[in-house]
Length: 137
Image (cartoon, rainbow, N blue to C red; front, top):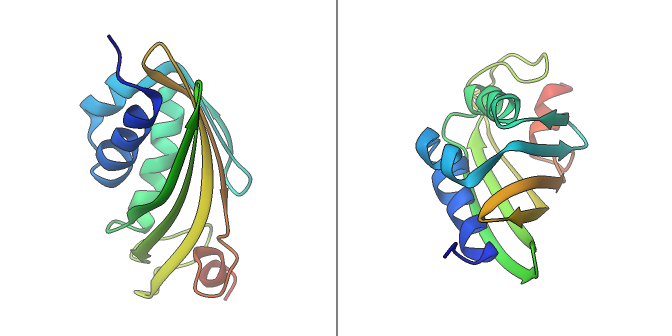
């Protein structure tokens, strides 16, 4: 029996997002996984989504997401989170600054048959100290 959606999403944050575990990504993300993010667009398919995450990781290699709250109902899980990182690589045209950045957001995941099929993130990356602030300097 598949784990409950909340457990699957927590594993996504821990194993895929924070630890970049490709085996966990294969297990937790559906082949037709869709990632929607206003600042980065929509990525259809596990591969393109993981490539986009890789680009973020290249700019912020020590990025760490901390879950503040998680609520689940049926196949949907909403997470409130905070990301912290150091700007070590190019990001949206900005050269690395070495600065610490942080941003908060919320993500809605949809889980079907034990796999995440949709990731819809809303992040406040434009707040002071966020990654878009460094990209516009």
